[in-house]
Amino acid sequence: MRELLARTWGLVVFRGVIGVLFGALAMIWPQITLFALVIMFGAYALVDGVVAIAMGVAGRGGERWLMFLMGLLGVAAGVIAFVWPGVTALVLLYLIAFWAFLSGLTYLAAAWRLRKQISNEWLLALTGVASLALGVVLLLQPATGALALVFTIGIFAVVWGVLSIGLGIRMRTVSKQGGSIDVAQFS
Image (spheres, helix red, strand yellow):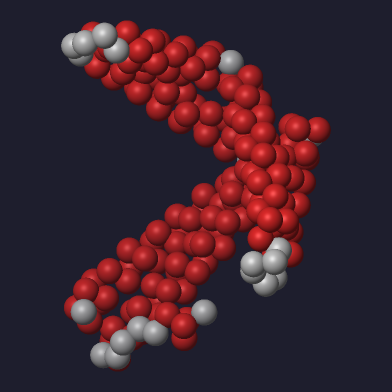
């Protein structure tokens, strides 16, 4: 194990540095980050659509038309993402907003239904309120919401990166000392 730690600590630190750089860039240029996410979605949808069309053409049975149709929709979504990235970003944002809103309602309903069966159900309700708030903000202020989401991703990447760098350094120290790593000691 010490040999493995001695060999891989640098990779953990490297991943952390990449996370910090990505997070910093996302916060410095949120519009470019959002654009890149839309383009990545477009590429995924396009490739997935082409593969689904191929499966529909090569398939047998009565349901291959469904695969072909799903493929056409995927190709269309990919093309739309490339041709109109702003519209694609807005549609994705609205999907996230509706998901957050409906999740919030579900959490609130669960908190209400479970209030006599669990303790601290207010935490579940608070989660629902936070999710509802996110959904409402994204619906009412989509441009601000999109940038806030990218900024939040950036903050997460920086925090994750810093923690990974610290863990990698700790792994290096422990591997040189010949001891074991206690993750609780790190946090």
